[in-house]
Amino acid sequence: MKKALIILLFALSASSLFAVDAYYIPLGSPFYDIVDDLYVLSGYARPSDARPYSNAQARLVLERIERDSLSPYAQELYDKAESYVDETVRWRFGDFGIGAELEVNPEIYAHSNTDGFRGENDWAYSYDDREKFLYLGLEFSIGDYFYTFADLMYTMGRYQGEGAEISDNSDYPDGIGAILPVEIIKEDSDGKLIYEDVYFKLIDESSQYYNAFSSNIAYKSKLFEFEWPKRAFVSFGGKSWSLLFGRDRISWGNSRVSNFIIDSHVGYHDMLRLSLFTDRFSYEWTNLFFETRGSGNEDMELGIRMLMAHRLEFRIFPWLDFAISENVMYQARTLSLQYLNPGFIFHNLNNRSMFNAIASAELNITAIKGLDIYFQAVLDQATAPNEDNSQAPAWGILGGAEYSFSPNDTGVLSFTVEFDYTSPVLYRRDGVDFLMYQRVFTIDESYPLKLYYIGYQYGGDVMLLHLDSTYRLYDSFSVSLSFDGMLKGKMDMAEPHGSAGNDGMPNYSGSTPSGDVIRQIMLLTLSGEYIVPGMPEWMDLSFKSSLSFVGSAEHSRISGENSNAKGDVQFSLALKLGL
Image (cartoon, rainbow, N blue to C red; front, side, top):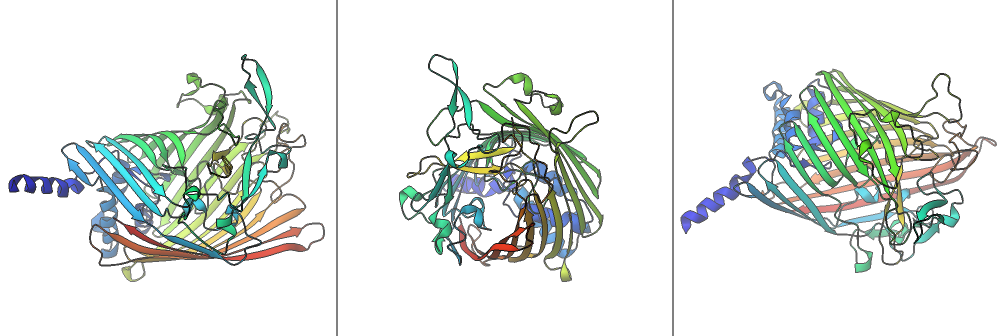
């Protein structure tokens, strides 16, 4: 009996020595900040910004760095990053592994302007980034090639029906872009095509955003978050490949603010994702699947809507990384498999009622140790020679620089500056656009919609300056100070994109920032995290907090005067206990 118990304990304790290639390191893991710092401090261009990584890809990224060439503190960072790569399911029985992670994360929020800041979009600390009060993650693996994960949670929902202010389709006579038109085509009971008015609901205000104090604790069962799991997938993987099907957070791009094609400000995406990677080249084929039933009722899906995207990345030199992507939004009543060709040039799918192509490019350069220079561009619509100008140009560009160093070989201090520009009708088309929504179930309001831009979170018609400084002493604490100054023009999701409304060509003629009234927005945030030392190996305890000032005003180009100025001081504090 004692011998059997010893063997079992050895098997359980040894599980951490065997990493699962198909395991995925979630976007919120410190692993990504660590390897970014290690690369830049070593004079290497940042590793691939198509994230999250499988364990096998993370191992490839880390092995590019020669540990012995690093300073003592950088070697500690290397070992810390390696511990995330070696992470696997908690208990292992031969080729089968099973694991669980439990977190208790009480979080409180407070703000000063309860009259002027009343909706989710008025907060610097978004709902998708807030902690989940009770969180349980369950995982299984077979060998090193198969992994599956799903999470459960009890936390405050995105919307509280009590005290909410609702808008619906009657408030948007032109619809919202092409994603929520005024009418849709459906089949009646006899199979005939008919036109039906679109009915949708948006929650503009909700009490957990306008109350002076709130928390993530759902004190009534009907207020808790019904939309979960938010991470739920199966994955297969090997030394140079991985395949994921399911739901997770994903990001493509090097911006410190928001990325143009796929960005992590969306809390989750349903996807099919194939990644192939070597030391010098990686290829990714990703398909994101979106909801099409925009009503507030339990209606059937209207068809299929998906982003088909492929991305090629070249590590030309250790200090130079270049990536291009060519992508298309596809919508139809049925799925035709002929279009699921990852080697096809998506731009040549020329049916405007079904497709809309968009392309991007990214560049990371670390010319000297510690200095990361980066660029990103997106092209949605341009006028070629011999074409008319019936559609306005749709594009965006951003660039920035981040300098990092380790003062006295202790911690990492970084300074960043970035400038972003998007043209007014970026992401907008009359037939197929790059907007998305997620239906949110609530007891009181059934299915209101949460709207997103799939890529750049602020959409088109934006000029933005971002500054930040961060100091990280890993396994101890971090502190960050950031500033965002934004000019936002007339074009937003609710604004028609053309002279004929949303049904006509996107021929809006303004230039960024467009319109007679320009919205001026300022965001200043001080945030930090403290990790409590001396905890048992099986327990993590930390605190994190943020303090933000959000200010906005409207500037009239005609009078030259500012009006509707308002400001808000916003605070959050979270305790995180992980087992």
